[in-house]
Amino acid sequence: MDTFELEIATPERLLARATVVEAQIPGYSGYMGILPGHSPLIGELGIGELSWRDEAGKERRLVVGGGFLEVRPEKVSILADVAEWPGDIDPARAQAALERAEALQRSTDPNADHAAAGRAVLLARARLTARQRHTEEAVAH
Image 1 (cartoon, rainbow, N blue to C red):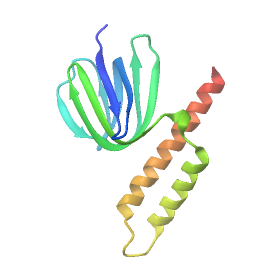
Image 2: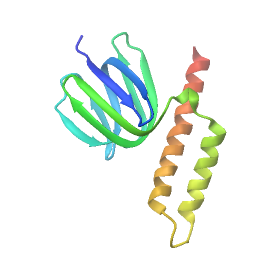
Image 3: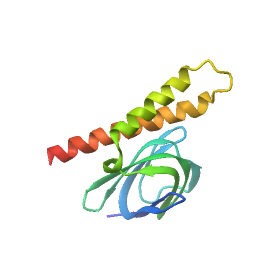
């Protein structure tokens, strides 16, 4: 079976290093499916759930928010501004962040950073969705 190496890090730490058969990565303009031998590219990491599957068929997931990725035929490197395992996400904290970001989006203050608020909304929603999926998968097993 063809594989490639996947490394995911933040500026603070290495979160994952694995040999995988496929990955789904949120890019700036949408999700990218990566398979072994993919053409080289460098891009901007989006906000969402990054997933990968290893040789045994086990799927893993991380929530990522911004950063960069480099794809080579034999290795994918991800440097995320923010990355969290779904099981580490505090749903109450994510919900509070979502509410604050949505309030900022609705703000009529001319100094409000609406673009940052939009990114914060996307990240909070990704966190809540990932945590919910993680909880449901844990109950199912």
